[in-house]
Amino acid sequence: MSSNSAVAAKVRAMYGNCLTNTDFDNLLSSTGMGGICGYLKERSYSDVLADVSENDVHRGMLELRIICKLESEYNRLYKFVDAHQQVILDYWFMRREVNYLKHNIRNLFNRESELAHMPDPEEFSAFFQNHTSLDTQMCRNADSIEDFIAACKGTIYERFLKRAAAVSSDYFSIAMGLDALYYDAYWRECSKLCAHERTALERLIGSEIDMLNIIWIYRGKKYFKFSDEMIYTYLLPVNYRLTENTIKQLVSAKTVEEMVAAAGNTGYKRLFRRLSDGFYIEENLRRDMYKLAKSVFRTSPDTVAGLVAYLDLKDFEILNIVRVIEGIRYGLNKEVLKKHIRI
Image (tube, rainbow, N blue to C red; front, side):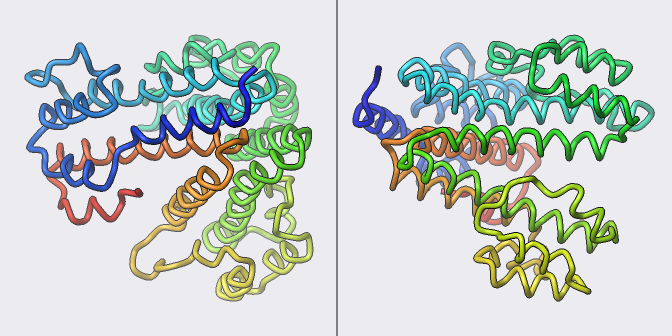
């Protein structure tokens, strides 16, 4: 069994190999996919790029190999930590399963649209295939919700999908329900940890839940014109810093402007910064979650929250690299790209 100090030393050493601002400046100055590949080989991505030639690498292959880095990091940590920490890492992975299910269920409902048959990157990820309990082939070929129920047999999703099928739920309701299922299960698992571990992890997960609920209230009012009752139906069933009274105030606000003003008193007012300048609220969420993950990693590296925060940071790093790859591939302005890189 690994000690807390050993876990802290492990994740700090792994974090020491993360890319820096200078690395991203150099990547942004690359002239093509070969240059990016060669640079990353010289850094901490040599294990997933060792057999890739800079002379003929294309964007799709490079992105898939970069994403594989997360599997390597996850496996290293999973094998190192003890059983209760592995349970939490299982929930970190569960987020990917939920996204995969949502993607494929959306394809089922949109079978006649351009979105249908668009692949999910997880379909090509050895990381995902090696860890999921879902029947991914059945998910890809599903013709009904009943097929998804069969694909999820024995998992936490099976009972939920049976209920959804029984009432003929639409995609939106299923997607929101899967999110609620995930966060509720994750939160309950957090409550089983000791106080020191729980406090750090709840800060990471609870803040995300609070912000997602604020975003949902905002979107429900601004774009969907939902009633208060409908908004409540889809809120994530967890309270962290948002009390029931605060949520009631946000939901019952008469206008979007009134709701945003009330949200400014919650500690999450940064979600609404610079929206008039073309920023998106979801992008602000990602920025805040990146900062939070870095803070939790620095203050609680000896906890399971430190492990989760590290994996989140690595996920952000990979997203940054993919943005650079796509930006260079399509000739986007490098200074604009740099604004979306979080280090």
